[in-house]
Image (tube, rainbow, N blue to C red; front, side, top):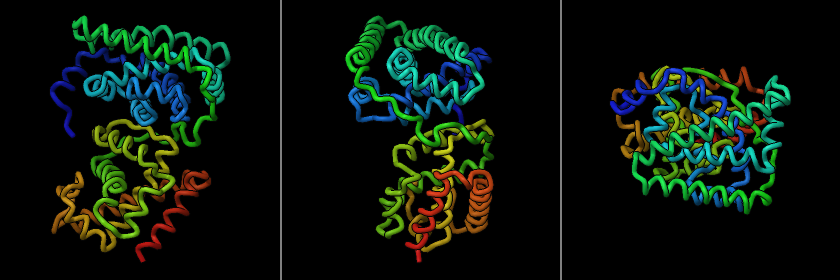
Length: 330
C-alpha cells in the first residue's frame, strides 16, 4: 500500500525526532493499557471500550509504532485512538494498577526505582501535553468538537474514579514482550499478509474440516489476527517492525497454514476466491514459481522460529496444534 500525499505531507511536517521523544510515553502507556485490557470483561475496561473504542487490539496497534512514518499514519488515520490511548494510559498510571505496571517495567529493564518513578512522572506530564495537542488537532478549531472531546475525557476520568477499585491486576500476558525486530522485504511482507488473511477468510470459503478448524487455533485468537492483519496491511516493505512472542507464535502457525493450503487441493478453492485480498493479484495460472517462492519463505521463517524460540511454551503449543491441524488434510 503506497503512502498517500496526505501521509507524505504529514511526515514532512513532523519534527524528525518526534517519535524518539514520544517513544518512552508510548511504551509505558502501552504497558498500562495492556494491563487494563488484560481482563476485558471487567467493569472498568468494558466502560472504557464503550466510551472510546480503545481495547487490547487497538492498544497493540499503537504500541507497534516504531517510526515517524508509522506515527504520521496513526495521526492521519486514527488520531482519536491515539488520543484515547494517552488519556487512558496516564489514568492507569494513577490507579491501583500502576504498581503492577511499574514493577514489570523495572523487572524488564535495568532501570532503578527512582528512574521508573521519573519516567512515570514524565509520562503523566508530557503525555498530557501531547494528548492536548492531539485534541486540538482533532477539533480543528471547532469549539463544539473541542467541548465534545473535553466531555469524553471527563467521562473517562469519571469512569476511573468510580470503577478503578474494581480493577484486578494480572500478570503481564505471556508473550507480550518484544522478542523480534526486523525489516521485511516486499515478498516476505506479502507472505505474512496472506498468512494472516488466510486465517480470517478461509473458514468462510470452504466447508473442509481444515478450514473450519482455523478459528479455534489457540495461538491465533481472532482479535489478535485481525489486529496483526491491519498492522501488516499498513506496513511498507523495509519498514522497521517489532513483534512480541505471541505475534511470532501467531505468524509461525499462520505461515504454516498458508503453506499447507498452497500445497493441497484447497489451493483451487483459494484461486477462485477473488474476495480474499491479495489472492487474485498474487496467484494465477502462471503462479507456480511464485507459490514455490512463498513456500520457500515459509520454510525459512518456520526454521528461524524453531532455531530461536523452540523452547518457548507458546511455540511448542503452536507446533503441536499445527501438526494436529495437518492431519485434517490427509
